[in-house]
Length: 166
Image 1 (cartoon, rainbow, N blue to C red):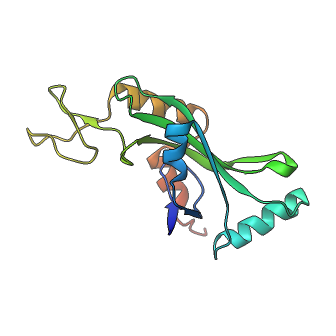
Image 2 (cartoon, rainbow, N blue to C red; image 1 turned 180 degrees about the horizontal axis):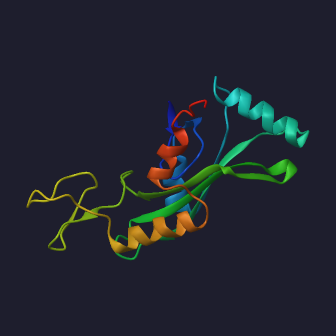
């Protein structure tokens, strides 16, 4: 059975559709340390694949690769994943067509922190009705990614706004 994964993550500047069979590229990277999958033909990917092959003058396969950067100490079943596009035959790597994300083995984002030190699933409201926040460890992972060139949600939103002609 094929699953279609649409990658449109905050902190990245690219959107790519990747069809892959049986397993999840990001979960495999989290558990195995590395995973790769062919960038398969689709309405979106056809143009990307053609452009990259023209650039390298090689018709060899284009892959999406994902690597585990590190696991979190506070939530060891979660980690930081980096992903990007490659063409191994031409030794080409396109990091600008990728990004980073935080992921747990259950497929969810890491848990968030409530005011009294209680961890709850990402996106839920704390028992005292306050908004949960990322743990210091998660905040630090995002800060490191931004320092390496990833976009913050605000910058990503700003870049996607249509430019008005003057």
